[in-house]
Amino acid sequence: MPAYDAVFNAFVTLLVTVDPPGLAPLFLALTAGMNRAERNQVGVRAAVIAFIVLALFGVAGAAILSVFGITLPAFRLAGGLLLFFIAFEMIFERRQERHEKSAERAVTRDMIHNIAAFPLAIPLIAGPGAISATVLLSDSFRSPAGMATLLAILLATILITYAVFVLAERVDRFLGETGRSILTRLLGVILAALAVQFVADGAKGLFAAG
Image (tube, rainbow, N blue to C red; front, top):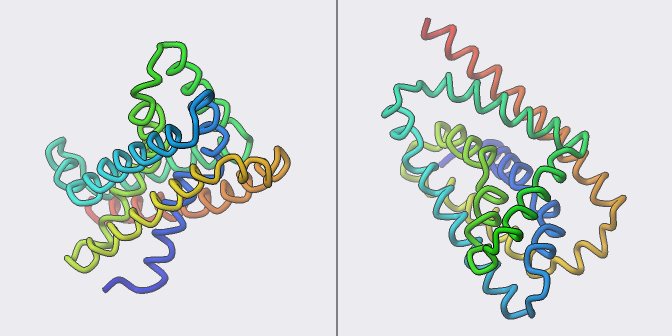
């Protein structure tokens, strides 16, 4: 069984990377005109698809990397840089703008019926950052018990995201523009620190292998 701090760090990393509060206004925008039942259906489907995608990379991420000849330290270094870029966007409020552009693009292409899969599940929930974080974390949860723990962490993250979707209107009203800005920047700083740790571990692994 992984140590408590490893489980906690993994949960924080995934939760911050997925950023459920930041997805709440986008969920409302994507489901504009839908009733509560339809919104709930979209939220459930998006959550299921996102969990399947992240679970796949959590279980088989290392095997997928080996097919392309990518070592885990190299991916850890690259993934850490990607997570740091996402943290940079969060701190300077650029990530929300990019997500909004993805949402607008999907609506203009008349993809309302498939909105749960794209862009909600992919790439807004299970985006490059979340996938990278999942693969990186899987290295610390390689035992059967560890893998079960990682899947439980993924499930908890997705359930929290779904709960935010259900309460999207209230969450958006409660946080307001100022609250969302403060929360996003705070989470961005935390993610930046975790990303630096990933980069340091990846560089250390590459030097050791070389």
